[in-house]
Image (cartoon, rainbow, N blue to C red; front, top):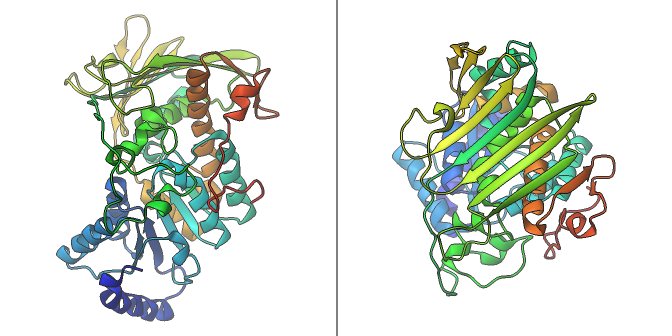
Length: 432
């Protein structure tokens, strides 16, 4: 525990215990936030603004991150909470009902498994897994321990996008045969940073966790960890996982039969390992009919394809679905519009924000997995698509996927890349 906050955290913990002793179990859901970076701020904001939900603890390996969050709470006139560097320190706390995980990708599955084993429900950021093996294990843990586990795919809780998917399923655009996911973000070079001492107040061994031991550099640490295979999955696993999830949802598909990806790192000479430009294609067989999913990552100047982004220069984040009677466009997380027929007459449209955090709390109360809009099996399946494309890119060839054995047919090298060598003691177990 961060000793700087020990006294004030103890006061907050005592107050929380007092509330719990007088409330029924369903009155207040107490959530611990794991990971106090940029995305974790959204988690903290959600849990401190909902009725009958409270922030119970903060966990981060960097003391400055936890201190910043504590400062935000105090400026809002809210009580501080206990802070820790290790998630395991809070898992035995019976006053904590759920954890919300906003750590780097390589930690998501193991922390979720630990939380499930401890009887906690879990809201875990996307992608919920760092590799295909983890996609299976995180679902297995949720099932074995009967926990509510939701991936942070906010679009699934947008009434607008729910309506869009329902209209496609109802046949309003004819047969939907292809989806195209777009992740065009104007990302600059990360440059090169040298090896240097670990900053004071950082538990770097805990930050590495399951990943291989590497010397500390700023580029491998906060945020830029996305661009290294040890800890991230490139922009496909950062922003793009949202769009491939929506594409798979709208198409109504699960496992592909074929995956192919090409790309590379263009323009920049820097420390980044993952590609900044990637073109992916998936083939599916749905009841004997073929369907196709295209996905593209682009890192620099781009156009606004299908009008996504409102014609403004910059990011183009969304999806296009093509049907025999028209096409439908998802613009961002909470908006869709469409065009019908050969004349492309304007069709249905809607914009409405998501209620994804609220959806998770609702399922924690109801104890029904079916109430979750991005239940972990759905999230893990979309992550598997992302992982397979990254593997195809890395081995330089098309993968033929066998959903019965979860292997790449006739490709032992690609099959080996479905998992990783874990650094003890941070091992994702083969049996949860």
